[in-house]
Image (tube, rainbow, N blue to C red; front, side, top):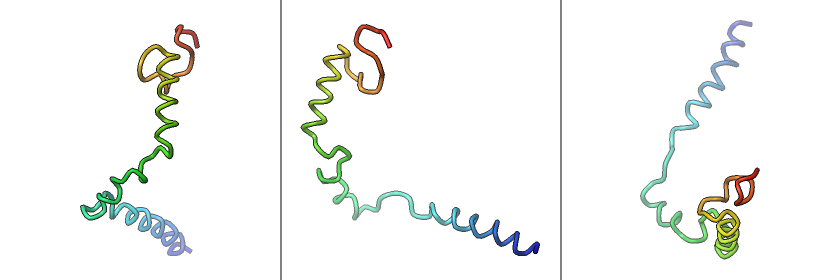
Length: 74
């Protein structure tokens, strides 16, 4: 009973410890990740239009992550 309990604690510990063994990007993988298709935004035109709308509404840059209008009200 006690060994079964230890085993159920040991297995997730080993699995979680080996899950972080290969973090990072290898040098030969960087050329694939630098392509335009791998960018986080699917449509750069839509992203640019959204940025322009948020910039115009907030009357400042970086208004995308905050709620409320340009008048200071929430």
